[in-house]
Image 1: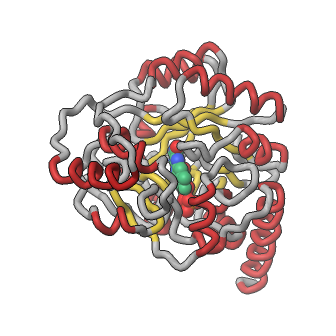
Image 2: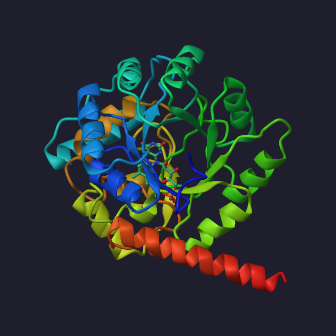
Length: 344
Ligand SMILES: Cc1cc2nc3c(=O)[nH]c(=O)nc-3n(C[C@H](O)[C@H](O)[C@H](O)COP(=O)(O)O)c2cc1C
């Protein structure tokens, strides 16, 4: 599926409202591809977005699912108190810190009944029967991995491709169940060669994390990837559903990015703001903390919102998706030609 793209770029799934049907369809219509983010959506809302993409394009796109972890009971302790204090200040109630499975099984049923060309997974691997059912209806299956061990497990599970997420990536780390083992993640250019060299791993690799320039796209292709997956580069596009305060913080620049569990209970990279700085030791408790902080995040205060962004966010532009993709394509070709020239 990825080898046939005119522009070897995937517009990343971005849950939380960013991945609109317009964003995905614009990518497909420009000769790249895109993924809808099913995370946090109800199955009915997901069905509506799939339908909307089909109305806007006849090309191939994908849907990304959050794989639920085991049901856990967690003690939120001081973090619950910190969120309650923010909620009081903003005049809202904290959310209920419940565990849920994001209605994973219902979304899989939907995608089996009404198949899409590609389905990608993050936060782990689904059970074998889920992969079998989706494969039987013809979907191309992709697992997000952040370590060689995860790549090995995904390969053994029989997926068709791996999305390799490096440490610079914006948003949540796709790390499997134990997010305390490698909280920071390995750099993309450590992972790509390691995975390429791994015995038995013949799967196509899609590279993600900190890629915003066409030279980055050329570099990951040179390192053996079939395509580059970019999220942050499209956050400011008019087709994206990014919140205004998030757009403004990205445009203003000047902030570092950092990994944090403060907003959701799972490591994710975002722009540094007050809430992130004041809560450096939030426990590993996803999705409980996600639900707990939802009302405070929704209040629109940039110092208390999750401002997800990859390390290279400063280069992201506010141009439409097609223009960003054409720029990436042209920069990638220039970089490849320069490389060829230099290596003559
Ligand atoms: C706002 C935002 C939301 C994201 N949501 C998802 C998601 O729902 N599913 C997923 O697999 N990855 C998600 N990601 C991660 C991307 O798939 C990808 O790994 C990342 O954007 C690559 O790094 P970059 O942002 O530097 O391009 C998200 C990233 C961002 C910035």
